[in-house]
Image (cartoon, rainbow over all chains, first blue to last red; front, side):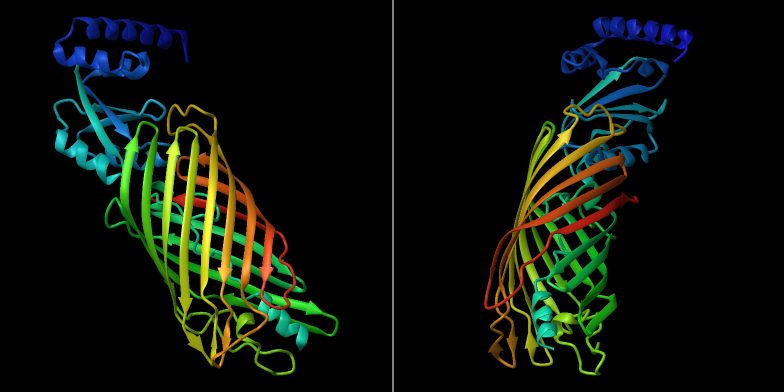
Length: 125
Length: 288
């Protein structure tokens, strides 16, 4: 990673930290949910759209989670997906202007064979 | 011919070609990832006395109609043969195609873990050849044929418990086959337990390459076969293997694996030679 990109990410990370501490209740909920996992909110969330964090039970191995990532990525409203297996978290960045409904998220996680326990939306735009 | 008959009896103990759990030989209750839609292929070599059996099943998981239900088709390429002084036999071709459906009727997920129970109903179709003959023209006994010549039906209960880097899989199942040409293979009851251990402990993303180590106990108790309604004395028994294995998840959708089955318990009816070590190598690919 170049020095410039590192600096950009550092700025984005600090901005994200600031946004988490000052944002609306939804963002505060996110901060609570990920307080033990500082990396759970990605700097990329500031690049546009909304970050949705899912707490998913049952993900026990990389290949288990692969199916979930594939299914989520296939959704039109999904821009990118990061699966954090050991933390049981799935982070989704929505396509700008589109919203993933709770129903679709639950259906997608269930179809992949896992249990969706929590949805946290982090409005950062 | 006596040796040929003996070898035929030895081959009556089937390979667990239907075992498609995440461990190499033990069934699992998972219906996700490599158990959902994909391909698996492996080759297993077994020897008993002068007899050799090589099975290369191609396992196809074509359809998962529900997140708790998967289907499976197993197309096995089989080689059976033996060689002694002045006598040899060799057959290679398609074995009996197997079909199975798995239903996970109990699922309880937790962070980085799960507890699942499943029922697996399976059967084989008589697609393997049954007319192979010795060099002298005499038709070989049923155990030396590539197929049984009759359908088989079975059911199994499988369980999977995963807690972080540790995993436990187990199954117990029973299968029966019909009769063909007056011969009926003995019913088989199999039981398997597998303990798994993942390296590394923490898996950050699905791109993390991991290695799974397994130690399995694979047992099968086979009833005596019957020839024209009479039990075959030198058939059936109880065989169990201790099976260490390793799997390397090269990519999220590609896994290569190896296992070696070491016989630790051999209690046969009548006179039957001992079972040898069974090495096996394979790979799994997720295609959806």
